[in-house]
Amino acid sequence: MKIALVRLSSFGDVVFTLPLARALREALGGPLAWVVEPPLASLLEGAPYVDAVLPAHTRAWRRAPFAPATRREIAALVRLGREFAPDLVVDAQGLLKSALVTFALPAGRKVGFGWRTATERVNCLVTDVRVEALGRPHVVDRALALAEAVTGRTGWPRVPDVRHLVARPDAAVDSWLDARQGRPFVLLQPFSSRPAKEWSAASAAGFCRRAREEAGLEGVVRWGPGEEARAREVVELAGGAAALGPPSAPAATARLAAHAALFVGADTGPTHLAAAAGTPTVALFGPTDPERFGPVGPRVRVLRDQGSLYNPGAAGLPGLSPDDVLTAARRLLVPV
Image (cartoon, rainbow, N blue to C red; front, side, top):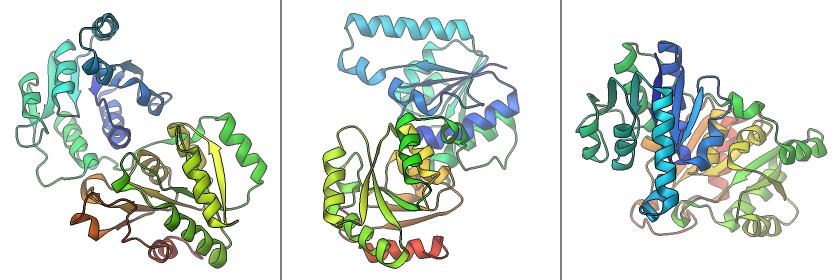
């Protein structure tokens, strides 16, 4: 049975949908094609349970709906969908934008979320089978409700399988790891897509100093596009207790984090990859709900700044101190 899976974005939610893809591929035999925003395609390439990646640049399409490029790209997606000719389409997003893609894909059966589960109910108009996931707030578990409905089986693994990302060579990351010659480090990701979700530079630097003093672990600040100057600020504030990590694309975080003794990160995609890769992970949350978006992995602790619930616009997670994070780390690591 050919399967088309629609989960366009975002970074963390695509990671959280990997267990659904694996379940569908293993149960139904595939092949499986995943429709996703092009910037996130690297998360899927090389996964043994994803046979094809179909690009759908819906963000750009919404910005310029009548542009020639938009028409060409939509036509290309429709053509690829017809060539793949899925027997089953599974819409794991539950939004209007995913509904438009699901509608455009030819298939005899289309499965998505039900009226009480879909984020945007208009999505239900394009599906034949509608699955409710009431009482299952986490994105992973909501997605696996779709797998259970399609396969008739329960007990699918919750931890996203990112072994293909850990195994994927990355020149910058591999060169940097070789130069360290195995010296242990704590990888930090204090940055996120919104200031209210970020850990302040001062707190991150303070944690690096404490980790060096108490555990002999050097802090390494991970940075992506547009974040190098901010990462250097943390390193400078740490006063010799931290170093700048290698330039790395988001998907390469899994390979980098797999070599870290500990990962400390805000609510952002790289944190979810680190947790899934099996790295001991302390995840720092503010206004977003960890019951729905908390990282999933074998060794994870989540800390939440409770003050952010009453002041969701506050930046820097001021309620989470370096000592709070170090205490959580002690419970993950022996010694710290």
